[in-house]
Every structure is written in C-alpha cells, then in structure tokens.
Amino acid sequence: MARRALSGVEAVTRTARKISDTDLGQRVPIMARHEEIDRLAVTFNQMLDRIEKLVAGIREMGDNIAHDLKSPVARIRGMAEMSLAAGPYDNCEDDALAASTIEECDRLLEMINTMLMISKTDAGVSETHMQPVNIADVARAAKTLFVPLAEDGGLTLTCTAPDTVLVSGDLRLLQRAMANLVDNAIKYTPAPGTIEISVDHDKTNKEKVNISVKDSGIGIGADDLPNIFNRFFRCDQSRATNGSGLGLSLVQAVAQAHGGCVDVVSEPGRGSLFTLHLSGLPEIQTNPGD
Ligand code: ADP
Image (cartoon, rainbow, N blue to C red; front, side):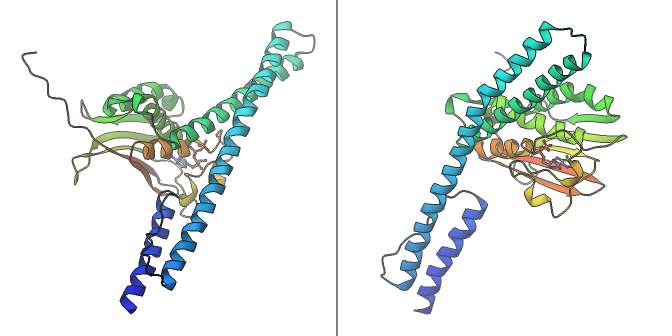
C-alpha cells in the first residue's frame, strides 16, 4: 500500500518537475483508484488548467498591447519625419528634437516587433518555413556581417566551422538567433577582447549540432544567470549599454521551436560561452558523377 501511495506522489512530483523545465501542458496521469492520491492528482491538474489559462491570457494581453502600440508609434515617427523634412529651422534644437524622436520610435518599433516575433516563435515554427539549413554558412555570414563592428570596438572576431553542417530549420530565425548572440558578445566585451564563433557536431552524439559564441567579456554573475533568458531582464552592470532585454528570449524561443535548447557558462570578469544545441540533419550525399 505504501509503495502504491508513493508511486502516486512520485507521478505528481515528476509532472511538477517537467512543468518547471518545459511547458505548462503536462498533466498527472489519473489512475482511477479512488484514493486520496487520485484526488490530489485531479486537484493538481485543475490548478494547472487554471495557471495555463492565466499565463495564456497574460501572453495574449502582452501581444495585443504590442500590436496596438505599433500604429501610434509609427504615426509619431511619421510626424517627426514630416517636421524634419519641413526644416531646417532657425532653432537647430528643433531639428535635433525631431531626429531623436525618430530614433526613439525606431527603438520602440524594434522592441515591439521582437516581442511579436518571440510570441510567434513560441507558438512554433511553421512547417512551410522549415528547410535544410547549412548552419556553418549562417555562422560564417554572421562573422562577415559583424567583423566591422567588432573591429571598431577593438575586438577580434573569428569563426571555426566545417564546410557543411546541416540542420532543419527556419533560416531567418536561425540567422536572427546567431546575430543576437554575436551582437551581445560584442556589446559586453571591452577592448581588447576576443569573440569566437564555432559550429560542430556534438562529440558524444553525432546527430546533435552545437553552435557556440564565446567571448572574453564582462561575464554574468551566478545570481543573474537563471534570469537572462527572461523577457526584459537585463543585468545591472549592462544597463548603461543599449538593449531591450529581449535578445536572449528570442534566442531561447528559436532554439525551443527547433526542438533544441540554449545554455550558458559564464564567469564575471572572464567571459561567457553561449551554446545553441540543435538536431543535425544527415549530409546529403551528392554523386560525384552528377
Ligand atoms: P539586451 O538587449 O539587454 O542585450 P538580452 O536578452 O540579449 O538583452 O540579454 C539579457 C542580458 O544578459 C543583457 O542585458 C546582459 O546583462 C546579459 N548578457 C547577454 N549576453 C551577454 C554576454 N555575452 N556577456 C555578458 N552579459 C551578457
């Protein structure tokens, strides 16, 4: 009897653990033994139903607010542009005011678009956007794109990747995730510093692919590490740097939408290593005679 009762408790515990790690869709199996433990399981599942509804409601409200903010911000931007075009004014402060209004609107629009992109990605990648992607090419392209910015900041940016490493994915989202990681590495690494992008098959499981971005930057404290993938979270030390706290949330949403994950190892003052873990695709064998 004790064993049976404990197995029920075990099931509730297992479900609770899975929920904190993954999604809110898990439920405890009901054994219909009409025991205390089944009543606990039913109550636990009812509580989960309610939490899932509340969280979905909060997300929907966030999306609606983001969506509704887009048009007024775009209108304010348009008015500032008109006023800039109508110048130059005698008082050059008016020009500067209009220009910084446009800049702030652009920042807000970027934030709103990223919020909407995270929600869309959270809901899953559309099958129509899935295609074989050579993630090694994506990494090389990110290097080429960011080298000027890195060099301006006194940093050395390198990329090590085999010719071809295939994953099945949404190219645009994977490019964006890669760009966010490299952009962060540049933002949070003072000169002189190094940033290394690397792509390879996992050493222990060849079907897995690791895409990592390692920097010699400011690093992240142990207290902050569990929060950095949360929306709008920014470590205190980086508040002086431009950012919205949404970049890593998008990286995580992209990883999860591809059935993968992202992790980080970091030490304050020594740097950070972000790794995207994805499932690889077998390389398409081409016939040399083709
Ligand atoms: P942000 O727009 O602020 O960069 P992110 O979601 O990309 O937002 O990152 C969240 C926070 O995590 C950042 O504000 C920063 O404090 C920290 N962080 C991210 N990447 C790094 C990094 N490579 N080195 C140090 N801190 C980082």
